[in-house]
Every structure is written in C-alpha cells, then in structure tokens.
Length: 400
Picture 1 (cartoon, one colour):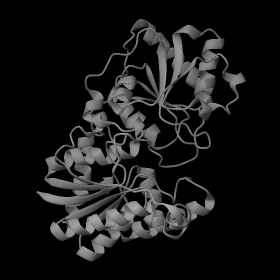
Picture 2 (spheres, helix red, strand yellow; picture 1 turned 180 degrees about the vertical axis):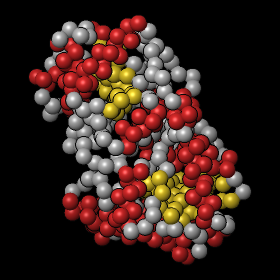
Picture 3 (cartoon, one colour; picture 1 turned 135 degrees about the horizontal axis):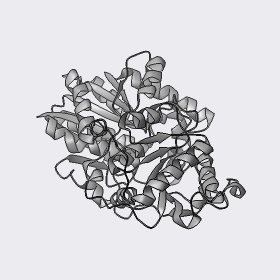
Picture 4 (cartoon, helix red, strand yellow; picture 1 turned 135 degrees about the vertical axis):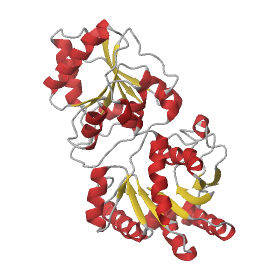
C-alpha cells in the first residue's frame, strides 16, 4: 500500500466544516491502496466543538496531533501580533514549528509516495513545499478557499496572505480546488492547470434518516451567517409574502437557523419580515445536524453574493439528506448547476418567484407530509465521499 503524508490543520474530533473534507478522504483512501498518515491540530475533549463521533471510521488512520502550546510574555506578543505579518505562511507559528519537525521525522522514517496539504491555513502548504524539496516527494495543494479569490479579511492582510498562497501553490506538483469556477480562476491567477474535486456527502449522512416533521412546514438553514457576504432577505421576504397574503398560515411554517446566532441577523430590517416565524437553534454535533437536515421539509442554501466558485460544503450534506433544496439567492453558477443536474432543488433570487415555489411545495406537503423531489440519483451518487476520494486517488496515482 502506498503512503501519503496528509497535512490538514483541521481534523476530527473538531466539529468544523474544514475537518470534514480531510476526514472523508482519509476514511476512503485505504480502499484505493493509499495509506494516509495525518498531521493535524490537536483538539482536546474540553475544547469547544469537540465531537467524538467524527472519529468514526478513522480508527485505523495513523494520526499525529500537534498541540499548539500557549506562548507567554513577550513571546506571546510576538507570535500573536508580529509573526502573522512577517511569517503568514507559518501562522499559527507554534503549530507550524512542531508540525514541520514531525513531518521531517516521518519522512526520515517512512517512504511516502506523495504529500497532500489542504489549505487553509498556510502552514500546511509551507511544510509540504519544504518537505517535498528536501525529500523529493511530489505534493498536492488542496485549496478549500482562496485568498486570491474570496474576501476573507482586511485588504492589507488579504493581499499579504494571497501573495504567499500564490507562491506556495505555484510550487506544488498538482493543485486542486473545490469547484469548477474556482479552478478556472485559480488557473488564470497561477498560470497553471488546476483540477477540481468538489466536496461530498458522507455515507452515514444519507442513511438511518428521520422522516420530516409532519406538523410544521420547516425551512432549515444550517451554519453561520455573514451578512457582508450573504443576503437572507430574499427568502425571508418570500415567507413574509406567503404569510401576509394568507397563502401559507403562519402557524404552519417556520424558518430555522441551526448554529447561527440571533446577533448575526440583528441588522436586518425586521419590519419587512415581522410576520416570519424564525427560530434559532444552538450548534449541535455533526450527527445531530445531519438528523435535523433529514427531518426538515426544505433545506436552504444561502449563496454568497457576487463571489464565484464558492461551493459551500453544506450543500452536499443537504444533497445526502434527500430533502428538497432551495438556494436563495441564485448564485448563477456552481450551486445552480449542481441543483439542475441532480434535480435536487432550485436556485432563485426574486422574492415573488421564491414565494411561488414555497406555496407550491407547501401544497405538496399538505397532500404528503413526506414529499420529495424526483432527483437524479446517478448524479447525486457522483458526490459521495467515496467517489470524491476516487477522484483524488487519480491525482495521487499520477504523481507516482
């Protein structure tokens, strides 16, 4: 079995969407004759977002968890306030320093056929680049987000990290991104080919699911809301229209925000949506979140405004749940195309069109509480984690 050194800062048991991609690959790589050896961040049981259930299926994966110890005194000031500007490609600095040494030790003791570094943060790419040069092992840069494309921070910090991302990705033997539009734009920026391996859904996210609640026509949005990048008003105004015009009784519909803080929506003009029943639910474990998706009537994708190539991982969890999906606003790109190919839902922006769709689905729900769309299962299955790992294996095999 061929060995791959897998560098991922985020990894289970940390319950973060950044962890899911790396975990999905590592669960399935052995089935394709690749043995992953992981270097990741240590995430102790007392820390927020600890979710032991995420370790399921990873018991046989060799994992080296790097503890980022807390610096003190003047060293703390340097690492937190100075180093991120001088060494952005080594931030978080303590993790980079220890993870780098562990990678060297592993390469001295093992024969790796490839290195895979998933970004962000930048230290994974930095370590992979150095180790590849030192030991002659080819490497893959896996970009989940790109500071060269997406607005992720202040302009000054954005430019700084983007320049290092571009430099490091340019050194990789292969570059992979999570969406076609992102790959096309990165290929232009990097002046080199970029392959696409989108996120996917885990097998357990589509099995043993609950049937939707029959008492309430529920619309679920799962995850954080960032109003500078997302606009929920289109759907909320559509619900307001349905309720105020008597098309859907207020007591039979509810918009649920799972894991989002009420503060995130505080700046919205509530006068325009004062009849919309909204419920905020706390962040839960991964398994519980998937169950909530499966028990909801409609799943809502809150697409990013004016940003190409943003293919949020949750859309694939939605896909695995089997529930109808509504992307609002319409991104006019990747998510729209995915829903069109799979027939798993619709992408709409105009509140009147959204209201019409909700009214139609509400009518179907009244006739059959467990109504589903006639999805294209062959297309849906292309997005399982196993199929996505198969795509990664083709990239890894090409390096050998």
